[in-house]
Length: 546
Image 1: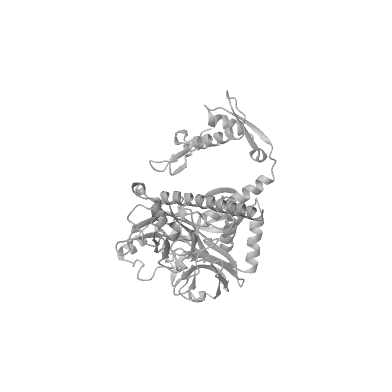
Image 2 (image 1 turned 30 degrees about the vertical axis):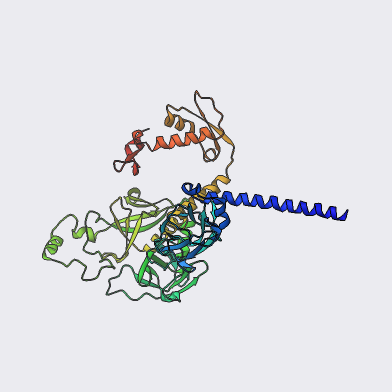
């Protein structure tokens, strides 16, 4: 009885292993047939599989032409060595269905590749070439007939390249800084390589040797200017690819600064600096914090907007003596001639005006009979309004300021409190746009302010009944009496003579149609700068229509 039970058990085990072997054999035969090209599939037999005479992805090898980590921007290559199951080289000129996929792990960026079959004696080698420009960790997948080759996928790290000054930027950049005399200010710099990757690869191990800062005063003549007293220190965080430049100025005034890397200016490294005393700083802070009230300054207006130059203008600081235009006899005759632009009366008798600075605009006014105001110029408080700082004027010996927005003629003003006036304007501008002139920072600030305003308002629904055939007119009529709270509510749009429940579709359609109608030049709200609609400007004729 014992022998009978043992025989039955052995038979069952043998039967089980036989079935398992047959299933594995069938699976491998299918894999073998899949990896063979269709033209030669009929010539292959099970005997070829038994001999190992077929392409096996797990028998193939991958060799790399570089060592990790490697810098971005170079043409990289690796080689796929094809082998039969029995270890013999597989001719790569035959179709093998090799698929290579390279992508950035974090950014999901796919990299194009090229394949090249090498000639004898390496006819079983396929060379794969590619180029990466974004630093980081990449996944390289190599497949044959849908099966991974050897240890695929592989992971390779590409590090950023050397620091390029033209790509290196200051974070939260602003064209003019307002600092306090004797107090430190830190600038955050992000070094970048040729492909805009944050990097810490530098020519020197110490960043103090790489980054230099030059400062000169704006206004005085070159022969009158003296060295600017300031301190700087540079520290770096190689983990976050950041450099911190700490700056302290010990003298009041207006200055121009330039940050360089390896004696080359960085991307946005040139900016102006207004240095105030502690008392002047408190005055500026009080002016900016006073919302809804215009702060005024007494000044003198030099009416030289139609002249290319005036006799008392100072030469630009960046021009050398050899670059300046030498005086000629013709110039002397022009200066002595009683022309409208160069008459001595207009230089000796500047007009007394008042400069008003509010959070929205900068205005220049004069008063007739000392009681009747008359607005002469108005500039918006925006990054497009630029200030130039010159030396004292020849009449009142007051520091001069040139205001230019690129649209109106430049306005030249001399003011006793010029630095406070300019600092009040700059700080108001900082407050309006979030403290940075870069486009992305302004977008983030706008969205953040919009969310804060929206959170304070009720989110109930308001119904808009508009006509599809008169979209602008009906939309204006429906929103004419809206308050700020109404604009923060959820719109429920209903098109006249149409039956639809607004679950989001009609509202999205209304926004799309109203935007197209607003920017359509046929409605005369905007005009074209050129023949295409890519550049538009506000149409004053359309805006003046009721």
